Image (cartoon, rainbow, N blue to C red):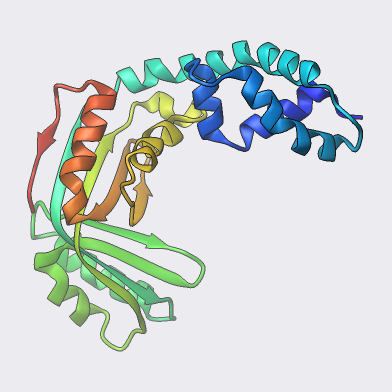
Length: 226
C-alpha cells in the first residue's frame, strides 16, 4: 500500500508549477494540504487527516528544493542567446520521395553560407523551419508532396546548452516554464545536443528574448537577423 508521503510526492510531481511554488516558499502549506485532501483521500481510498498531509508536504520540501538547486549551476553556464527572425515553417506528409528531395535541398544549401534551417522528421510528417528568403526554394524542392501546413511570420531564439544538460533532469522545463508563466506561445521546440531552438511568432520574440535574458542573467546575448 502506498503511503501518504508517496502519494503527495506524486501529486506534486504532476504539477510542476506547484513544485516550483513550494521550492520558492510562496505557497501556504496549510492551505495546500486542504486543497489536496479530497484528491489524496480518493487515491488512497481511505480517510486522510489534514495534519498527515501537511507533515508529508513539509517532509517533501528538502527534496524539492534540492532538485531546483541542482539545476541552477547548469543554468549559470548558459548565456549565448541568438535571435533569428523572418522564418517560415513547412510541414509535409512523408512519402517515399521526401528523403531524396531533402538530400537535394541540402546539396543546394551547402553553398549558400549562413542560412537558418532545421529538419524534423516524425513517423508521418517532416517539418522544415528556415529563413523566409528560402521559402520559394523549399516549395520548389518539395513540389508534388502533400503540404500539411505552412506558417509564416516566425522567429526563433537559439540557446547554447552546456554538455551537462543531457544528464540533468528539468533543465528544459525550467526554460520552457518562463514562456508559460509569461503567456508566450511556442510554435515549435527543436533541440540538438548543445542547442535548444524555441520558435514563436515574430511579435513575441522581443518579449521572449527579454524574459530569458532576465531569467539567465546573461550579458553575452547576441541578436542576428536573417
